[in-house]
Image (cartoon, rainbow, N blue to C red):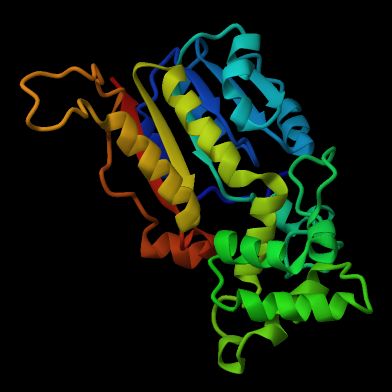
Length: 307
């Protein structure tokens, strides 16, 4: 049984305008919250392609045995091939929730939360070799600093890396709490006890590096746009500025028409918009949702429609 509480669930479902008989993709299945809502709206003639890189999440949803559902254990960056192998040319709606599910956060097997004592891991795909433990113990200082600064947007990255390097001279950094303590002691005292743990940004950076999250997102969004039928919608929920920037920029680029210089008498580039932006500004959680689910605080929903 999932413990995950989907963020912006009602807003996302409302924006996707499901109809009876729709073919829908849940590109990040997780606990299945969006998938269940979609199934309730597409009727008996509809179809759902549910994708997750986490094998356990995929296997758990398969147990529900709905003949309208095809569950795929794969990364959403492979969307084009997934649909081709499923015999599907176009779909009517796609949703992607880029946050980790609570099932993964609370599961020590994933080793990604500093709130749970566990071996450092952070892999979605349990078959891949790169783990957070390998990164913090083996990457060169300059590589570590680049990752934490770029993916964590961490202003104290230099001090954090310095502490990590000092610690690993005599000890292997094995667990989530070990690393969290190292990071906590690396930041200035007045930054150690706020509402957000000082380890949050470093853990975010490691998770992104381990799972190649930003690169996969950059691959996924254009494929998702191409996979939509006319009038079909794509909804993406992001949880930090790096993700949101990628989605915003790709949406904006695909919503643009002619890019010829203004003084050209007629268009020679031939570029036409592929999508329209349903919400020019992202939809964010209500204060009430944030109170009930603090992990929702940084969520942003962007939606586009295929022209």
